[in-house]
Amino acid sequence: MLKGLWVGCFLGAIISTFLGGCRSGVKLDPSLSQDERERVRVDLQALGRLSIDPHQSQWFGPVFSKPEVQASASKKSLPTQLENYLNDRIQYVLPETMIVEGRFRIPLMPEERLSATSGFVVAHNVGTSLFYQLRMQGEFEALFSVDQKQLILRSPRVGLVQLGPGFTEDRTPAGTPIDSLFRMGVLIHEARHSDCPSGLSEQALKESIDRKPVSDKSCGHLHAVCPPGHIYQGRSSCDAHPWGAYAIEAIFLQGLAEGCRSCTASQKATAKLLALDRLSRLDPVMAEKMFAGKLGLPNMAGSPEELPSRGKP
Amino acid sequence: MKKKDFFFVVSLFAVWGGLYSKLKQEELSVIATIPEKIESSPLELHNPSALEAEMSTFFESSAEPKAALVTPPESGTEKRLGVFRTPSRSDLLKEVTEQPHAAPLALLNFADQVSTWFAGAESSVPLAIELMSHLESCVEPKAETEKLSLAVQAFCWETAARLSHLHHGQLKDRFDHLDQMISPQTRKLLELYRSLKPSAS
Image (tube, rainbow over all chains, first blue to last red):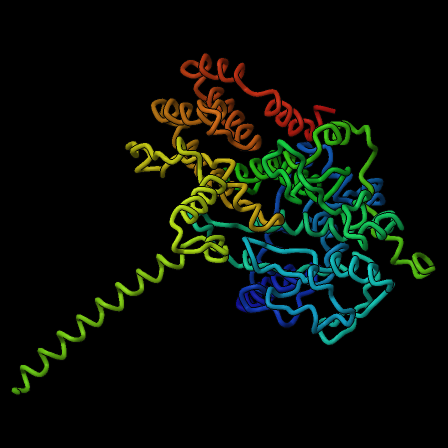
């Protein structure tokens, strides 16, 4: 009897661990390497185990939970909200070695060929880049092959994130361990690039075709060139519009730095420094207004292009 | 030739071959570190002044300011906890220039290093004083050439504030002085960070 109980407990533990690992809706491309697959699995599990005090961040709720969850009496836990945020925006995680041309029928423009192989890139949102390519070539939808299926790509919300070589690195060249929290911050950032709340405007499309800086960066939350005087002056490493990917990542990191009960002192220090770095990439005047609530709540909607009636001429 | 002599000659050749290939490898690795910019530039190699000019342009544009190149000798604490090295602007810029979307790893190294020092300083006043000196040079660099990123300066100020809170009697005055020296931009960044907390709304 007792033996049966132990066996039952053991099997229960295995099943719950397995289900816990598979609870996330983020799907893994079958061609991911064993290392990549294991790392994504471990990271998503770590996200599910985070214990965060929600009272340390005023923007965590508005950004990471859906309006119906915010309004409901039984609010979901923060890790669940973070998982839902990722699930809505990352449909497939693709391997570093993926060749886009083999999966996407629309020809890529030579200078726009997508590469995550230089520098320490953890991941990048390839779905948003392909969406822009598609629209710049006058198309409204195209198929993307993944997992023996054909996904219809008609908005950045197709949610395709390609891992970079940095994703499977255990340590920095100086020997500092790189842990899940850092990679999660990158995934939260990349996920935001999947949002295109107001659709791609005609002007933004024209500017993209003409190879001019896009004035309305809200579709895909494109980055801006850092202004003169900024440490990253001249690089596309800043955000000039509200609630972009750096702002969302900063909110996540500040929440960890100030409210994470399950993090080590080193993890919290890293989260704080990275949050400060992300905040320093925001237009200061815009950021002050944004976090003071003067620019309204963040629009966390997906994309009107997901609706078949919208977008086509 | 005796069998013994034959093996002696063969082993001599093997040792010589090993040394030769090692030297060759080092030579190759030196060649591999020559900046790409120089390799690909249309410079005439017989013109040494042009090459020198090109080299100096390269080093001026990408290397650390000369003041920062001088590495102070390691203190006893640094031998134990690791060298306290504040990432310079050019450290971060180099990583972001290679790939604008990359996360600067220098920040991960620095946060981990500060955290290790802070843990040691919690129970040791001398270590707290040594850490405070490092944080002071980070918040308030002595030379214009040592300019740091706002995020790094804000992080150092914030760590100094926590340290002063911990060892109030010994560090309060130094922190108060540091607080007056902080740049308006760094203060603005710290205010922005605090505005994410609910109490600021």
